[in-house]
Image (cartoon, rainbow, N blue to C red; front, side, top):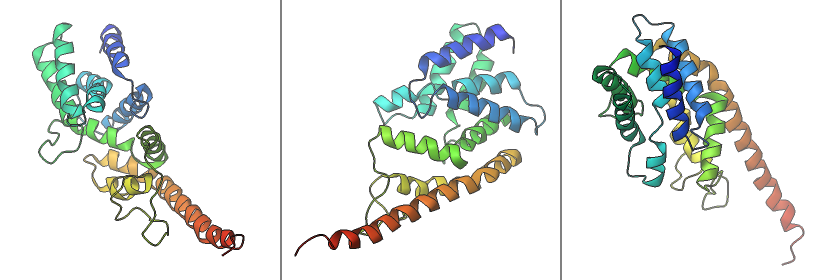
Length: 226
């Protein structure tokens, strides 16, 4: 890809990225992850891959404003219109759109092309490990959700069966389970190398919170007159 085209696509991406959990740095990390994964594959169309990575989250604002919308579908269509309006071929624009539309896991929307599979994995790698923990905490903070919930008996829930959204609930529902969902061999390897960081953080935080409640309530009761 010539630099003039890269700069054009990058400027459009930057104009669309407003979400702090899905910001420009997330986009660059996904792009760099994708290039590492692509290095282990053959016959990759790097122009399609780079463009799709840069534009994969440009539909986030629309989904944030209307949660019923899917940012992958919105973003794919936005990318297609942008590329066509700036002289890219219909075939190229359609390949990029297909990659973006299938980068978000959905049972009826599986990535088919090699570039789409690489983007899918590169995006999921950024949910693994320590960076996945940090991004989740940022996003949960924006949504004003709790770090954890309490069980009916007042003990701290580990998030497994929680109905209310929280960081622990998101960890047990999503973060803990992403490692078996990769398509490419290299994507799976990268994520697996990061897994221990996420596990250590979750287990350490759970231990600290539980200890605080278990010992804190007993200490408090010594100072409360009945």
